[in-house]
Image (cartoon, rainbow, N blue to C red):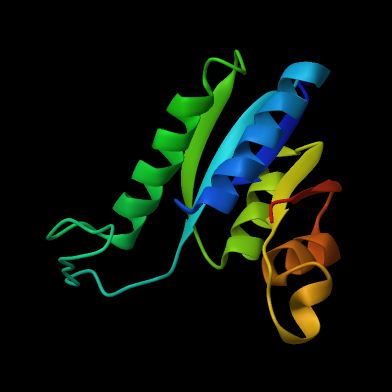
Length: 141
């Protein structure tokens, strides 16, 4: 089975930095890359206008657009790249995709946060505690 690296994106500059590092790692190790963007559950009739949402665009649509956009930007670095939108918190989405796809590594960024989560960051900490594989934490600040 082909080795796979899973990386999460959310449209932020720190996530883009992590995704780029994940792509570089995939290229260096000959792994495929899977770009994931998480979205929360929402009512089916919810409409948004503002921010990243186009009127009538669901959270899932936004997440898929973000994941696909990141994958397109990284395509020159990695020959085999896929993308997906996954429902759940960012940490849960990364872990569930890694489990589903039998990933070798999850790449996650470490944002500056306050309180107890500041050691790794809330997403990085959640992934590290529940990952079914190795976790590579990218210093993004």
